[in-house]
Length: 265
Image (tube, rainbow, N blue to C red; front, side):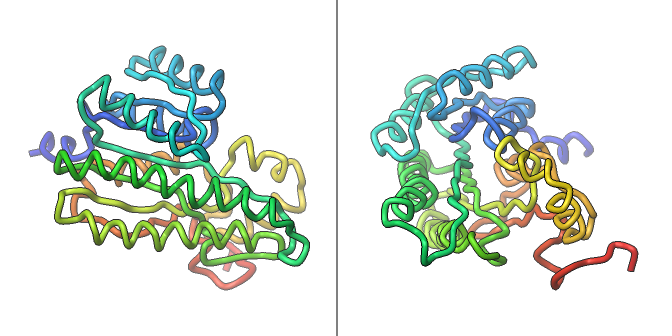
C-alpha cells in the first residue's frame, strides 16, 4: 500500500524540459525533477550556466542534457522542445521559470523597457507553453508548470509592469488548461513569494528589506529555491493528477494576510 502512494510522486522515466535551468528556480526545478527520476533537458540563454546544471545533475546520479535557448526567440524555444522529443521520443513535463523586472514607476517606463519585459515574461511563456502543449496533446498526456508570482495579486510601486505580466500568465494558463484538458494535458502555475535566489540576493544584503519581508510572511522567513522546486515537482507528478488550471502560491502565507504581520500575535 505504501509503495502505491510513493509511486504517485515518482517521476522515473518521465521526460522534462526546464526553461531557465542555469540558475535560481529553474536550476532547482531541474535538479529536483531529476532527483525524482525524470530525464531533464536543461535550457537557458546562459549556455555555460545550463551546462553546469546538467553536469551537477549527472554528478548527483541523474540524467540531463543542456541546450542553449533564448526564451525570447521562438525558434530556440521550439528547438529546446524538439531536443527532448528527438532524444527521448516524448515530453511529459514542461517547466518555464524565467522572468525579469525593471523596478520603475509606470510613468517613467520607456516603450523599449516595457516591450523587453513583456517579450520575456509573457510572450516567452506563451511560446514555450504553445510548443510543449502541442507535443503533449499529440501524445495524449503531459503536465506543464509556468512561473507566475505573488505579485500577480499584490504589488508595490515599481512593480506594476512585472506584476501585470505575471497576472497575465495565470490567465493564459487557465485558458490553455481549458483547451487541452480533454487531451490528457494539465497546465498550472506556481506563484513564488520572497525566495532566496541570485536575483534576490542583493535585497537580502539590505537589513531593512530583509526584516520587512520576513515580517510579511506567516512563517517569518524567506523561502529557498528547493521549496519552490518541490511545488513544481508535485504539480508535475501523478499526485496532482486531478489539478489543472490553478495557481499554487509558494509564499509562506504572504498573500493571505493584510499588511504588516507580527508573527508573535
